[in-house]
Image (cartoon, rainbow, N blue to C red; front, side, top):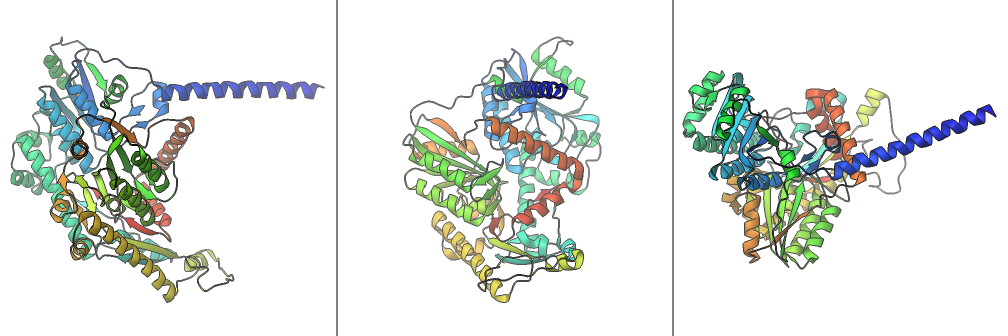
Length: 584
């Protein structure tokens, strides 16, 4: 009897505890999904941080929202640009304080932010930038400010660009893992880390070319802002003249050497408030919660569809993933909505599955037959990212967008020696047909099997080029000469006919409105940002898992991620960037 009483009491306690936990969780999620409204005080200063990584669409951090911390509602890139534009006409916002403390974004993203800050300044409001240590990409954004201040004991990197690639061939050799590699295009260097120990001549040539063009844009924009010619700026880097903060001041890269409190004292003077008065700083995340951006007016709509991340087949709920089934649904929805008069397809992707790219291309091609389709390219729109872009009526890219990479590859792995010699594992089996076990990692491929795979790669490459020929209205021979897996900058892509114009998302929207003959329209965005309980929990889990792995691996995280990507590529024909370029 005593046991029964203890058991029932424990069971009741467990039920009560579980109920309280569920209620608490639901309150937590409810607060995360519907944050409290924030009010912006008069005479405020909007704070932007160069270290913030801006994805294409809004990101929600429910834990931060629940705890009341900044970072709970991180706006997407275009949303940030619109918020800066909104601040231009917001009487409560007097200026922007740009905290320069690292950079988590690509070249084209930084260009979008920089242009938005430049437009903000033209309204007559101020932009002050301050940093303790400035890297080249953060300084690039900061150079658009009225005043750029550097900590007197801080530092600045102004040594030029470099690109470094991680090669895995030596590791695979030691492990006796033998990749079977199939590719089309002499510049299609995606598989180089698996088959080489250093860059091929072709890859070195293309990387040297586009890196030089990115660097040229970097110098030109900074030179225009700081009233210095590009040759002078290049000389600073080439001679390593910027070693101390005093050097940055001497060579006119910054306007002064000040501590944060001194910069804030200058801001108080600018705001006409007392020396001891508290400045009303408003973070971008709080300004997001305080601002309702207008999506326009009128019955006619323009659909803005964001495509960011790896291109994969099927359905996926992972962040930064372009899953073909999901995008077919969204594109079809926009096409079948008679009120949607044009589509702007925003692409920020280095590619992925060639088949998934073809599926998305098909749906966009059908849409183009009934309404204009305009593409806006972000940091990357290469390989599969270019595949899903090439059919557009018009394509916009930033000067420093990386695009092209028209080529495909496939990788199969022979793990038989690894399993046998390293682990003592062997394999055996039976099959009913000659090619029934094609793709197995347990044995080397036969010559006949290699021909089958290469034929598939060749066929996919031919299809890819035919899509470019039709979409860009170029001669097949010209496309073949500029394809070959070659990566191009936005500037070169315009010259080659792969891109129509240089410009950002606003330019693409203006073009779509013009082609669709719309003076007024309502902007609708896809995929729809609509947090659900499952998405909040999944997002939290993914962020915690990624954070733990990064913390454990440290600098080795990139190696871990590259090995994961290689594993995922086994047996699939890929239209993907050579690798994620790391610039220093």
